[in-house]
Length: 154
Image 1 (tube, rainbow, N blue to C red):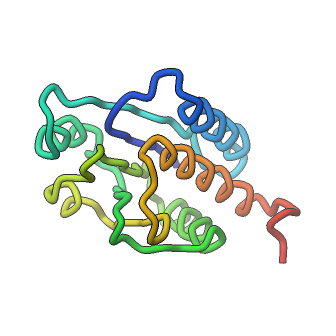
Image 2 (image 1 turned 90 degrees about the horizontal axis):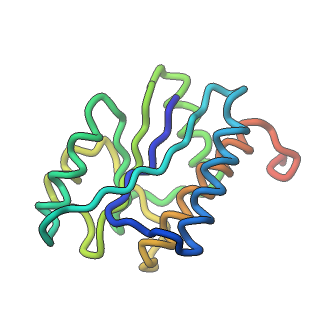
């Protein structure tokens, strides 16, 4: 199952961008044997400001995917439950999952409505650059949990 972290805005060489890339690479390498991956990060930018313009550049990347939008009102899952959910999507035959992280003002209502589900990182507000790294780390953690990593065994 291909996993895409689709984000509004380009981070360039920021430390958070490198951290997200590192976790996505680790998840890709570890996930091969589990039919998870590759994990890619796709950054898009709108030509105009605002959520509607951002929605237009996000929309083409969503076709045929199970879309999970990061939103402050979304479902909060512990890491193990998140991993089980990713594993269930894979086991149910989902071929591609796209996680969305919007711009500074969040995601356009039309994009949220088009998402299959929403998720949150808790009640705090996180910088978007850090949210990318956190999401990439959680995807990597999900892969290691599904692989039975000793760190995650009960």
